[in-house]
Length: 133
Image (cartoon, rainbow, N blue to C red; front, top):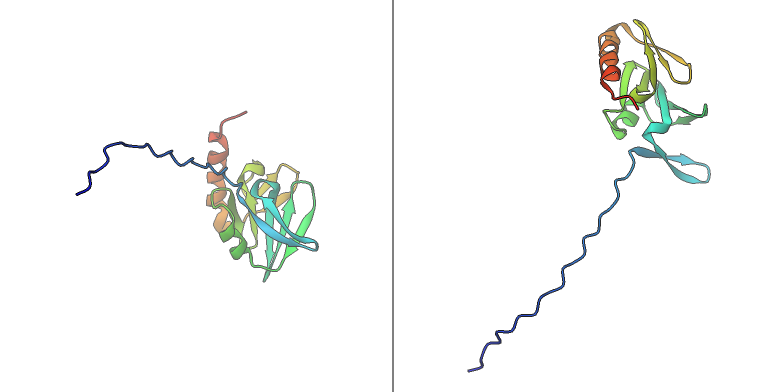
């Protein structure tokens, strides 16, 4: 019989690789390849049948051949709210909420449908509870 070895050699721990959190957003097709667009660069979305127009902070727009519903399902739900059948706005870019419209930080005014007015009133609460910087 062979004697069992009682010496113990510690095994080096496997290093833990921490991956940074990816910013929330989506990849959009541009002529020279896809570009990742962070969600906070998008001011609002406007839909027209099977197309969605992105409105960005720098004033540019981009037309994409997906429905507004598809786009909103790919974006973070907490960041965007639908205020009309064909409009959605980024909550962090809201400046003022009126009864029938919302004004964004770039000065653009977006109409709120009658059925979504109760939701727009709650946006005021969400905006007011956000800590100031």
